[in-house]
Each structure stands twice: as C-alpha cells, then as structure tokens.
Amino acid sequence: MKKNTMSFRRGLYSALIAGLLAAVPAAAQTSVVTDGGAINSAGGSMLRSSVQNPEQYDRTGGPVKFEFKFKEGDKSRILSHVDEDVYVNRRFNRHSVILNRIAMEVTAAGEDGSGTQEGTFMTSENAVTRPGGPSTFVWGEEYESKFVRSRLGVYTISDIYFMPTVRDVPVFPDREVSPGESWTAQGHEAHDLRRQFAVRTPYKVPFEATYTYLGTVTAEAKAAVDGGADSAAGAGGAPAGKTTKTLHVINVKYTMSMETPEPAGMQYYMDYPLAMMGYSDELIYWDNELGAIDHYTENFRILMESSYGNVYEFRGTADAEVTSFERVATEEKIADVEEQIKNLGIDDITVKKTDKGLTISIENIQFGGESAVLLNSEKIKLRKIAGILRDYPDNDILVSGHTAHYPGGADPQVLSEERAAAVADFLVELGVKDKFHVFTQGFGDKQPIDTNDTAEGRAKNRRVEITIMDE
View 1: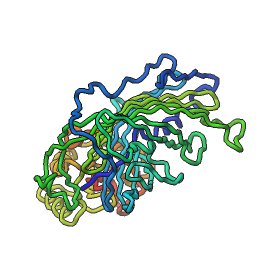
View 2 (view 1 turned 30 degrees about the vertical axis):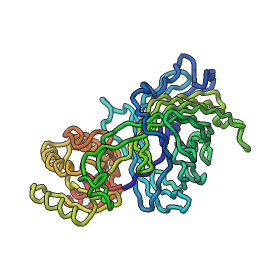
View 3 (view 1 turned 180 degrees about the horizontal axis):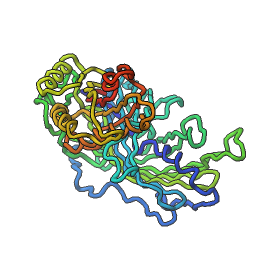
View 4 (view 1 turned 45 degrees about the vertical axis):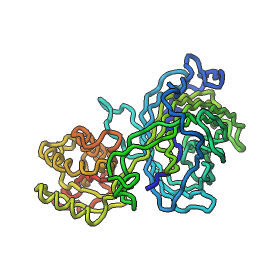
C-alpha cells in the first residue's frame, strides 16, 4: 500500500521554551549574525553539509519526473527522532530527545493529483528526569491536522492547524529533473507559540529552499504488512518480507530569517517573538514508484530572539521513516491472543479492542507498596506476554497505568505514570521493542472499571494495559 508523508522535523521545540522563560534574566542578550547563509552565534559553529560523498549516488538513470501520488484510503505512520541541544542566552540548557509520531490518511484524491490528508501528530520529549533517565517515551500532546497537498508538494492548510511544522518541503518542478540538477521553491515553517507568547495562529517563517537531485541508492525494505490489499505480497508480487528498492536522493537546504513587528494591542509588559532565523540541510530519500518520502535525515539550527532580549537556540539532527504495521484489533487477532493467554496460564488478563489497537489489560498487577517496583511474580507474567508482543514486530506499543482510588495514599497520577514506565522499561529490557517504539501514559484513578468500595473492585482498577497499536 502506498505511504504518503510530509516533511516534519524537530517537533514542538517551542514547547521547551515554556519551562525556560521564567528562569532567564531579561537583561541577558546575545548578538546573532548570519555568515554566508549559515547561522553563527557567539562560539557556535556552522553546520556541515549532509552530502558527505557525492560518489555514493548512482547518476546513470537519466532524468526523472517527481510528484506525489495520492490514493484515497492510503494510510501512513511516520516516526521522526530528534536529538537536540538547547541553549539559552549562549548557555547550554539541556539535551532533548524528541519523538514525533504521525498517523495520516488520504481522505480524498483530487482529479488534479492533489490529496486531502487528515491525521494526528503526537510529540513526546525525553530529558533526564530521574537517575539514568527514562528509557521509554511518555505519550505526549496530540494535534489534529487536515490539509490539501498538490501533486508537486505545495500545501493548502488553514491557520487553525499547527501541524506539520515544516511545510512545502519537498516541492518539485513540473518537469523532469536530471541527476546533479538543482531548482528552488518557496516554503515556510509554522510554529506553535500559543503558550509562550499568546500567538494564536501559527508563527510562520518563510524561506526559499534549494534542491539538488543527487542520484539514486539501493535500499533494503520490508514489504507492506498493514492489512491493505497489497499486504500479502511485496513489490512485484514477492512474498512479504525483505525486498530491495531504488530510492532517489534529494538534498534540500534553506536559511530563514524574519523579524516580527510589535503585535497590535500588545501590553508593555508582554514578551513576544522579535525575530527567528535558522538553517536546515536535509537529505530526502524518495520512493518514486510510490510517489512518497521513504525517509529523511537532517542537520538544523534555529535561533529565536524575544522582545525581552532573550535568545533561544536549538541545534541538532533529525531523521524520520515511514513505517508499516499490522492491523491487530480484529476479531480473529483478539481471539488468537485470548487463546495464547489461556494456554500460558496467566490470570487476571482481558483482551479487547480499543481506539488505538489491541489492548491486553493486566488487572491486579502487583508492585511494592505505594511504589512502581515490579514484583517478581509480575515479571514472570510479563515475560510470558512478551512472547505475544514479539509476534507484532512492526507495531508500536503503548503502556497505560491505572490505580485504584485509595484516600491517603500516594499521588495516583504520579504512581500510574511511574508504574506504566516500569512495565515499559521492562519490556524494552526483554528486547520486545527498542525505546523509540514503546510509549507510556498514566490515568491515575480517573478510569475505574469496577467499584473502589471492595478489595476485589480495587484489584481490577489497579491495572496496566498494554496496547499493540493499530494507528
């Protein structure tokens, strides 16, 4: 099945600013200058190009026509990973690892080749918050989005939507392009600054991107297994499994710089974004047969100055991939997992379909008193469940924690989050998934499934749910 995606890079780094503004002295200020199109700031170095060895690309294929191919009903899941250093007024503030998980569907395909896409963007950030740092990612804030994208890549999107961040990348010329050839196109970044500066619509920074078609590479890939009509076979009818494909490599670079006039009605004591500038150097690996991005890598550097004179800098690398997955929340799959649970002799387990996939609910899960320390009996249970989870190597996992309502005990919200993290970390330790494909969330005592007035009811409410995700 076709995978249609968009360029989405560093995630909501604006969300990082929320925790920084109050801690930064307003008097501190850094000068920011541009040098040869790249950003340079007090001791900072310019980014090196992503194109390390042009000879690695095959340029014998001749000219190619690039365009997006949209088909109604096509679904895609994109996972991007960002390693980012944050500086505040020239001083290192933190290192962040950010995951952006995107689930999109083409809801309409136009006669002109355009596609209407709808979906959900989720951003999760990890910083060191406990000894060793969390190994898995908390399920973050979700953003809905809807937009139209032309066959050449240009967006039409309302200002009520804040995602995606990077728009109109890539944009292709309406002609064939030969290896080594370059072209330019307009684009913009759209940032969510509602929390920090009360900017109610996306803060848009325009740029002109320069594209160069470098040539092709051969890549190994998995055949689609997402339950679509083509899922039983790979390219050319080959059995599902590993295949090879030709990817077209395109380098895109841009710098951006914009100053903001003082907003109308601004109070004298209110801070606002005064200027933003940045640099991006990206390699896009394009699947021309599907008419979609296969994956990309990027170096970036962004600086934003506020009217109070504070300068926030974000520099790092990013990568993203379009991933396939198996539809698991079907009656057949639920019955199969229920049978496996029964044969494994695990008690207090229910299997059900939820809005995110197939959920294995472990009721009466045992931890140390008022803690998130898993007892050995529960580790034995999770080892058995891990065997089931390994049957779905392409599906992400969401671990949700729930507590019973018990007045006078530990904070139920914190406890549920910590217990979900303990289970998720143990699954990673068992090798079920790597830490970039396991997410956690906690609901405290807000979603009981039984009464809290009896010991039996509280045992049911004290549960951890493991969801094999469909979306």
